[in-house]
Length: 107
Image 1 (cartoon, one colour):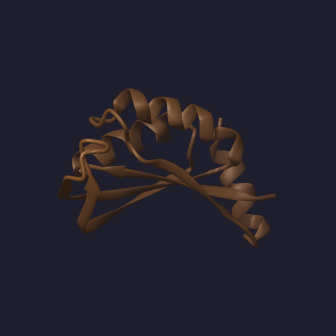
Image 2: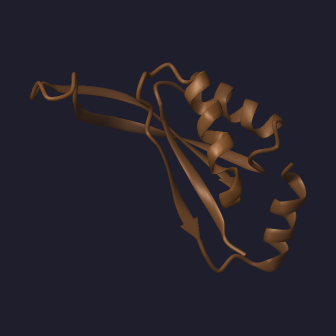
């Protein structure tokens, strides 16, 4: 069985923790991590050629693929950005004991 990391760029640790805890309490993820980002640069507003710079954090949620859509829906509801980055990475070759723990913590 495969697991996924759902990646969400957040504007602050406070925002990431709020989103992570809601998802954890809903049992859509078994755990989460928050990593600081020293800089992020992007075009904003769209199609203007203007480059914005900011900071923020990366929220990583450990879960199973079937929980991506419920997590995405909850992130969109709670996130301060109109267009938050939400993506996933498939994680392979996990120890069977870890997968059993992961499944046991989810809804």
